[in-house]
Length: 115
Length: 114
Image 1 (cartoon, chains in turn red, brown):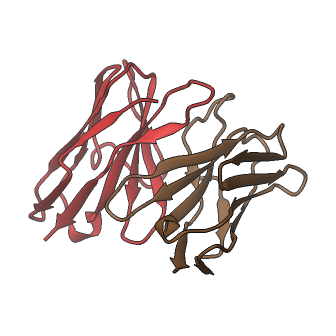
Image 2 (tube, chains in turn brown, purple):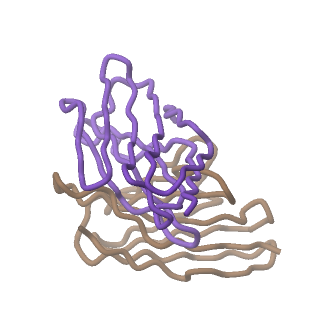
Image 3 (cartoon, chains in turn red, blue):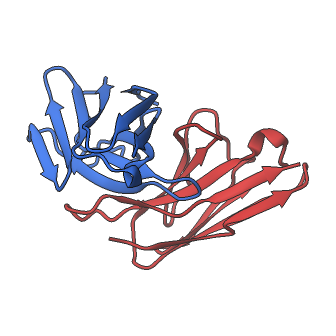
């Protein structure tokens, strides 16, 4: 299955600033997904990122707040903009290897604290 | 997002016992049902997954039971060990037919007591 490197692993940021999270995959994948996991909660899909097209955002998430780039088939970034304490969460990227016996792989996550 | 309902929210099992976690889904178009295990500070890791054309799948101590007519599936952990203490998430997706993103259940925090 694919191996994902996600950076940074954690960060503490001031409110009103922005943080860009990077997701690097060791193989080419069509779809990459970004999730948010609030403390003690489940994973909620933010958006789906396809190479060469605009990301598709879920209800409640907007591009101005969470701009996503997908410059090639192995890399994506998620920016959390104009942060507030409510944005404190774990942000995870995920890929679907699209191979029958392999599932969706997740990065180790970025633990963001906004103060 | 389409819902996947998971229960119980937390579970305490004695070492050697059987842990059972249940999920129910609404969308009959789902065609892929994985279970993920997550330890604190880590991303979710795939445990086992099933397709709707199979009623049961077993991998080691982990078994998925799938009831298509009831739209339910469950995870059974046999001979539960303290190292199994983690949060478990069920999920579903339309992996073959379109919306490939996973929809997750709410999670079950499992504690296996020695």
